[in-house]
Image 1 (spheres, rainbow, N blue to C red):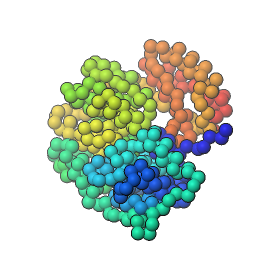
Image 2 (cartoon, one colour):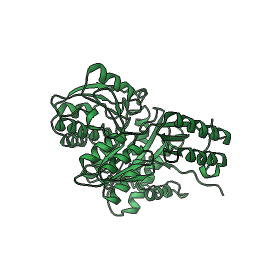
Image 3 (cartoon, rainbow, N blue to C red):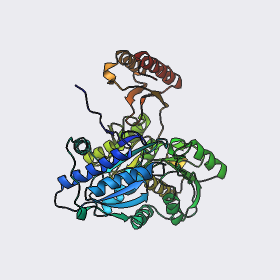
Image 4 (tube, one colour):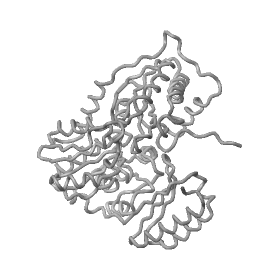
Length: 448
């Protein structure tokens, strides 16, 4: 039996702009379906949805199609314009919204785009909610549209964005005397992040804040922190923060120009909150060094699958205040149920200021094992357990790593990639294992 293609991946719907499912026609149907979904789930209520976008070339097109679909279902829309993804979560929690959608492909190149859905609590859609929306999208009957007198309207959300900035400022102490570098990845943080740090009194040096629609994430931001590291060294800055295209990730750079990844930031923040909470959540990708550091503090690490939605759900389950991903998604549940790069950066900057210590010293106790990630582009994604040669190679690798590290092989949820992650106490052993596994993948015939 042919299985219907699933729209949702690990973080919403994603693909190449102007190709299925991100054609204007399909996005309009998705918007109409979301409106029908809300009307059927909460009948008798006039719904309002907040919508935001990042800076990529196709975002205006996709947002317009989405809004067209929503309003045709009788749903009002507040257009927040260019705003980080977590800003949508904040606005939903602060306002009277039935949900929200962010038009973004996060860290992907400009030709990609996507739709991230939030429910009325400001949380990313659960798998059940995604499934419910997909049932409406692929419904074979014509979807009901609003009567002419009930068509939705579109409102400007500029004032709400100002409220989001005030929220970010309230999370930090005054930062006068701190020299801060910000790499905005030519993305959604390009206006808000510098304004927030300037309002907090920091001396701000801004990079990659001139989006042209095509330069989002290009050689900069959280995916390429080496750019900011060089600037921190050149300008003798106290700290640097690099965001990704939609602003839900943050990677830090210490005063020496060393990159401080999400694992070290999680360790720093978990230690800060340790008197209030003993539970911490990270993913299967997080370094074993983080786990050992937390264990020394008497803290419990809970691991989840990759994706900040899964981290958020687990944090709520175990009552954790701090969680996140090595890639820079950091969730501070006291503030928001989703990762927020600017929020993370102002909290870390505030700690540097209050502790009166450089970031390199603050994170020095989180000693990470050497870790490498190899991405293999694939033409298809058969179940990993069906790949006999790869499974044999993984078993051999685990034997070599026994007591010395670990291996993780998984498909990307947003790109045609097989990810091979190896962690060990020896760089040579890591390279040997990666070569072994990559060879097995190519022998399976799925690599491009």
